[in-house]
Length: 420
Image (cartoon, rainbow, N blue to C red; front, side, top):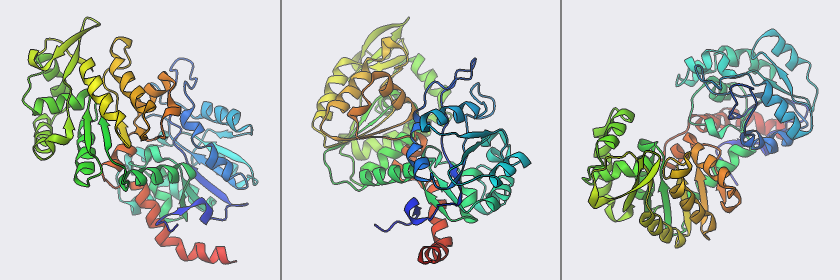
């Protein structure tokens, strides 16, 4: 299969120094510093094992400045060591002399993890800067001369344009890791599938992204039905002319500065694809922590909407049961509160028990599925929230574009090495 980017099998990494960008951004207990979930670390183990004959330098991030979980990667290295059953040495620097010396002393089979790349200001300061600027950053300038290859396995951060994600690709032959390759292959399969009916469930609060996903999948005749839940549903209901009530309007106004434009976008989609877009028939308001059923004819509501109602769940479940492909992103309501998790739980149960090929993504989606213990019921659970939804929306992902460009730059060099 011909790809427009390098994969690991294209590189001879034995005895070579490889910089591997991972996405091990994990939930952290702010008091103890203990990692609460190792899912993202586990997702990279296959790539790390594939590179076990190389000198492997791991770089990654944890949270962002100002957040309670903006911490060192020391605990990540310890967790990774336990999972791999081999030592992952932690170096509490990124580009300093200790980090550089640690890399120079490595032997094949060694693995080191450098400090949180976001501790270094330019990782965020250069976000979205041109790639020729990023490849001259201090991070790249100091680390690239010590390495033979760069491998990007951080699909969850592929929608970012930062030095550790795209800067190395102009100066080192760069490839997609096994996780990155799998994510792209699966989402490409979705975008080129002939499985119908294809049902897409869009929930959560990323409304603008969700509308772009709906537009892309409907325009390209990939989706047959869009089922809206969560804040996405509230916006489409508003676009249909329903008054959701002051508490909900205040919430939408606080969340979206360009609310009128978003409502206008929803109206345009409904005008063109009204029969393809489903909105809830009943909603659940939060009445002092208790479920309050709200039918459309009883609107406006004096309660803030926290879930979808039973009639909507039944209708959506019947549609899902007939699907051949299902794509889901975002919960149906405030699932973190048990009282309002019913809609999310029932919709995800319906997907997991269906015979359709199912692909789900988004941080909250994964948390809900893990909490329910039904992960095995899905064909693919994407590690990327923003990356997944941007890919499905038809947007270019900077990290992936950078990998494609790297193949153009280094194809002759890789072919020459392979022939030796």
